[in-house]
Image (tube, rainbow, N blue to C red; front, side, top):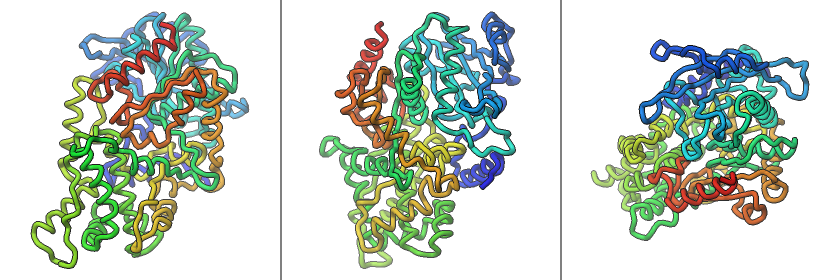
Amino acid sequence: MKKTYKIIATLLMAVLALQGCVKEYMNPRPDEGQPTPDQPAVEEDDIVKLLLSIPGVSDVVKTEAKKADSTTIANYFFSYEQLVDHFDQSKGTYKQRVGMQITDLKSPVVVHTEGYAMNMKGKKAENGDLMNFLKANWVEIEYRYFGSSLPEPEDNVEMTYLYSVYAAIDIHNVVTMLKDYVFKDSLWIATGTSKCGTTAALQAYFSDKYGWKDFDLYVPFCCPFLAASPESPTDRSIGRYLVNNCGAGYAEGTDEAKAYVNLKKIREQAVTKPRLRNEILRQYHMQAPVYYERVLSVYGPREDAALCGALQVFQENLMGNFSYIPFGSWAPMVPDPDPIKEGEEDGTWEDNELIQKVVDFFFMNDEDIQKALDKAAEGAGTRSTFTAEDMLSLRAIDDGMPYGPQTVRELGCAGMDYSWVPGPFITPALADEVQEKASGRAHSWDYYEGQWDGGKLMTDFRAWVFGESTQKIIFVYGSNDPWTGGAIDEDAMLANHNIKFFVNPGGTHNDYFLNEYYYAKETSEQIQAAITAFLGQ
């Protein structure tokens, strides 16, 4: 079915806005990298002149960005002409947006292989830990179809060329150009976190496939590889890891250990305790109206289906918490539902208060969640961290255009696991069905049917990592990050000497490996040693 980018994006933004979940990268940003009134363009220098002399480069802008020490560094933004279809030149070209910060032309170059729109704002310097550790230059390459990098006309975008192989060739072309004209004597490192990390790892895969020698090292953080099943792109490994692994392994008696047990109780008692279940159902349409309307539109006023939808909201909320906030910051807030009594419909004041406390936590609408985020930001010191808006974005029903179509084509969709569901009010089979048809991440995209590759790309990648990879890759994950459920198997490191694999104890969804608030000292030192060894420094 023909869709336009504007129509789909507008509808999606409207839906997500109802929940306060609009992610910044969802908006096309045609002015990205352009000077603003409070941040004017800077006079041309030798780099600007060099860029303007390169075939295919246009729209060059130089700005000044502030570093953490209040000094400034130059930001360079430009467009690079790419083929719309790298296998058919007749389809024409498009402009891909690229950003750079230059420390020294002979220093290493860290390329942030975006999975979304370019993140560089131009007003402050990128301060990624990998960039700082290597005292490196920084290059950021916008992913095709995001931001202003559109391979198809804005009023008729069908995502025809939205595949990982096209993105990989885009990156190869930009790196080849920069090697030829700008950074002629540098080491090159590809990195990214989450989908951006998946982009980096797939760049290594396609580099072997096509014989490219672009990068000396790849360091992807927290990146999932969701093979799902031949029948559906919904991959439940994320959900299984969320239920079984996130928050596990803490010493008995700690807040974290108690919270892990109570999270299990809340899941199960939301199904088995009628009074708690009824209050969740009563508040579902108020607390998560968009999710509720989706389930209602498919199943009508069925309480069992509605409860399955509500459980999906809870699981997605937990996914956001575990992804972005150290568990110790919010573990004390997890209530114990055991004292909730049954048999007294009105109950005592204390009992009703506890039910409300559990329901508030279930839908994550408590102000204490915001306090935990503020505390996490304070603990991070001067290092940038995820904000409340970032965490809320994980509650969005879909992850944004055009990420959604790509997940249902070849990257897989993060699904929740309901094998733990106790009967008889609902069953695991019904919860899975509601997820697939009404409440999950993949269900609403009409790109779904007939376009899923059956898990081929992800399965081929995993097999390649184990045996055929000649690329040096350091995979980094966090033990409390739900996306670790989609990690490659740790045994890949034993099977292939080019692979290193680290799991940060208690770690969340980030790449702050120099920050002791987020990374265990031992893990940080191991990552630093592996980078140094692989680069021969």
